[in-house]
Amino acid sequence: MISKSLRDHRRALIGWVIGLSAFLSMYVGVVYPSIVEDPATYSAQAVAKYPGALKDLMGGLQDFATAPGYLQTVVYQILLPVLFIVCAMVLANRSLAGPEESGTFELIVTLPIDRRRLVLQLFAAMALGLLAVAAVTLAVAWALARSVDMDVRFDRIMAAHIGVYLLALFFGTLTLAVGAATGRKAVASAVLGVWAVLGYMVVTVGKNVDAVSWLKWVSPFHYYAEGRPLYEGLPVGDYLVLAGAVAVLALTAVLSFDRRDVGV
Amino acid sequence: MTGMTAVVQAEGLTKYYGRRRGLEDLTLDIQPGEIFGYLGPNGAGKTTTIRLLLDVIRPTSGQVRVLGADSREAAVRARIGYLPGELVLEGRERARDYLEFLGRTRGGVPPGRVAQLAERLDADLSVPMRKLSKGNRQKVGLIQAFMHEPELLILDEPTGGLDPLVQQEFLAMVREVRASGRTVLMSSHVLAEVEHVSDRVGIVRAGRLVAVENVATLREKAVRRVELHFDAPVPREAFEGLPGVRDLRVEGASVRCTIDGRPDPLIKAAARFTVVHMVSAEPDLEEIFLTYYSEEGRNHDLQVSS
Image 1: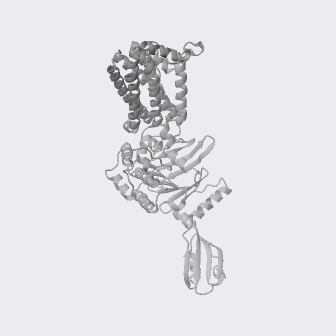
Image 2: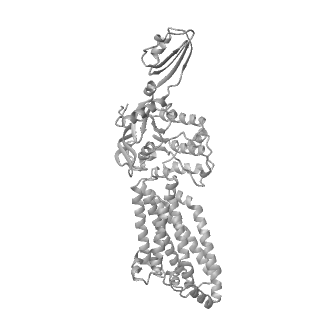
């Protein structure tokens, strides 16, 4: 079932790898060199362009013209995570709620595979598919960083990339869990959207607002960015929290799908 | 009935979707080696029953055992072939590859079996599934249901979308399944589709099983229209009061009537005259079918069983 699911995802995975690589080429291979040529101007422009709260939303925009600062602000702050999260959502919806809504799941759930096992296998296929996308794009990001002489260590890029992977896996598994519980793509996507947007707001513009800042504990972005992986390396504790949350969500998906009617 | 364990054993099986009734209090045994026709109009509860047997949906109350096992046991589904009522096949994958995947997951298919079935049904398996025509899709559905030679075939509206020649081939395949001692449950909203192969039919209406009948018995109960033409006018009295004869009309040398059950008394009465021509319509099982419905309509508590 895992290999079948991966085969079904193949085209989507290839598409996402190409798209993400194009995104990285653009921002690391093309934009970065021109910023390095004239750091003072671009840095000032960037700060001027995003005043106040918007600057918070973009993660602060500090040391925009250094290699880690640029990568953090432009690539790893929001754009790459968002693209990865969307990719994870697409894979998750294609795994369960999509086939259930279209009706192709009818033959799959009547295979002699235990329901719990089936969901675990779909989860595993999604996690592996995302991992493949993350691995290839990590290689692309590293190759591009080398080619434009970025002053960043490989282990730092890898640390950030692992964070993106875990973040996307968290939201993918959330989508899978809601899809497994409800069988509805739209519901799953909506839950993901709300959680992701609010989660991001809480750790950026909301971090100095006492009324909401405590919510960062339920925001996956907190565990993704708080450890500043591009500067400080792998934030093991934070990432373990994300991994643990993924495990809890996967278990939720397994148990909720096991107990309900399919395709009604 | 027989000493063997029933292939399908449902007891008080009930399914509500929220407040909406799907199936109410179904008690039914299907024996090994029989072809059971499951009849009823759309929305009567046929698909609900079938999906309960396959554990796609869970009963609100009651129990069901399939092939001697709890329907919740996944392993038992390797011994079942299932054709969904609304089969959806999508994607770029070729039908052949999808069948191969299904076969492997169910524990293997004898080599050459898929090709042989495809040839019998004249199905093209090289087409990506999303490009299958409605007829071809149904053929792929039949192949996947039959290919692993399951002990129990559960076919929901199997003949929809098939042209008449393929339907004949399909019915032959169903008979072969019975000949090898295996069991078939097939649903339909048209009796004519299942009456020629079914040993028994169950009639479900508005979520309730209202009748289970042997097809032979049903046929005997059938109303037949008969027309007899003689070489000379015949007296009405000769045909009046014959057991089972109704709606008698005698006009000169012709007699028209309907008969319930055996035609024997009418034939014996007619034999006293010279018959030049006789027309007897096929027993219209559809009509009895409808009779059950109208009876059920009048009396909700009525439950007939064989």
